[in-house]
Image (cartoon, rainbow, N blue to C red; front, side):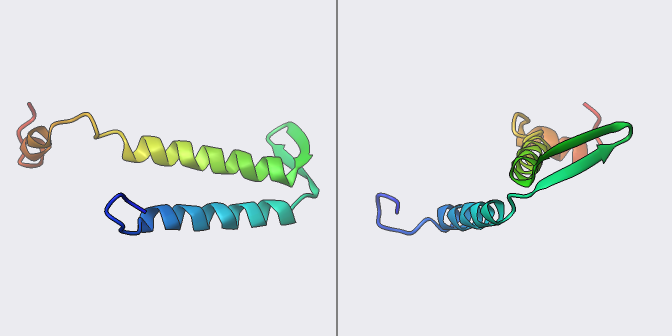
Length: 84
């Protein structure tokens, strides 16, 4: 809850997703074999799922965070066709 007593729906959503991820990970403890070109790896499915989650989080972070440092006016000028 926030200081004003309102529920943070974003926090609840994140907690539900984390709980679902934990359930999936705990139910998939088998060892899997992964082949990429000429490499072959054997690892626990838990490690594979955690690695995939981290890669997905990193890609999402960089994909959505690339315009954070730009000024809104700069984006509007570029949308209008001004290359400055």
